[in-house]
Image (tube, rainbow, N blue to C red; front, side, top):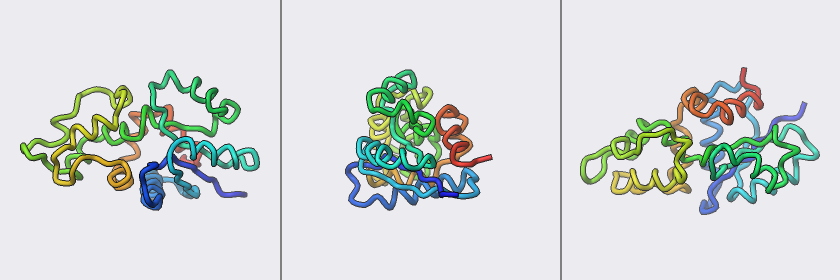
Length: 189
């Protein structure tokens, strides 16, 4: 039986994608996957989609995880626009983008970034709403981390490190339609 493969959208600003691979491996291991898929990070959403389309038709054990960059209601529209409708059972989204995953767990942001110059923690600056409802979760993350010990959030630097700190069960609770189903597709019991 062929191993499963997960192609993920990485930052198109990263010089190296190994941090994204390590971050996702750590997260999936902590989620309790008995066998990790081979994780292939890509430089941005369009390149990830291209990789997936190139290989999916020959191997039904390939999955794709990308940012939706919109509310959940836009999922089928994006699948159609990107020519992914026929493989929709293998395509999963971070709603609206992966930064919403980080916003769903404000305590990790406090631990990771520390206090800002004014002594305020990122969680105290966070707009209190469902993380999937942020139109621009990356902007919100940058806003609340500005002036912290580690500096303003940068996806290429902080994203892979924050992935390693996420609690998989919390993600499943916040994003059951995407993260929870991705885990099941990858073999989580």
